[in-house]
Amino acid sequence: RETYKMMDEFGVEPKRLELHKAYGNESWKYLPNGRRRPWVMSYKDGSRFFLPVKSRFEYHHFDPYSEIFVPSTEQLVRRQMMQDDEALCFIEECEERRQRELEMEARRSATRKPTQRDWTWWQQ
Image (cartoon, rainbow, N blue to C red; front, top):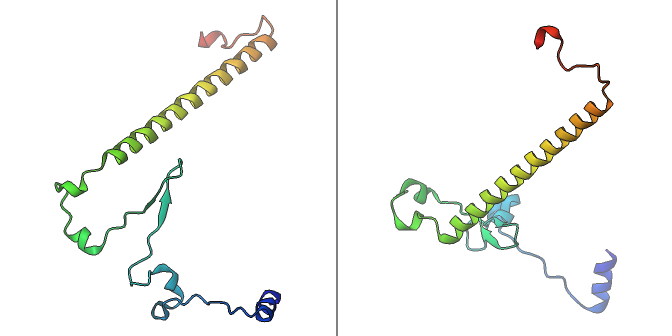
């Protein structure tokens, strides 16, 4: 309210954002030409792209052997990099878990008395 008062005193009219009244409350989902508003996705490195949502026509006439559906080199490289990253993280987590288990086992063996055994006589 105070902002609008100051704008009135300054002589500035706020320009209201006119959305499509045809879509009602969902007008933010559509572009001014009537198409759906695309979702903007981004990779971890910051590069952005539109989420590839296909139309009903594209779903109906889907030709998997067409050249346009062959993934580009950038997509292949990004997929391979993501898989390598996931594999590396998994291997590092496994190594950390193994190190923790070894440390716990060393602690347990250090605190155990020499007469104690892991298995009883019928399990040996």
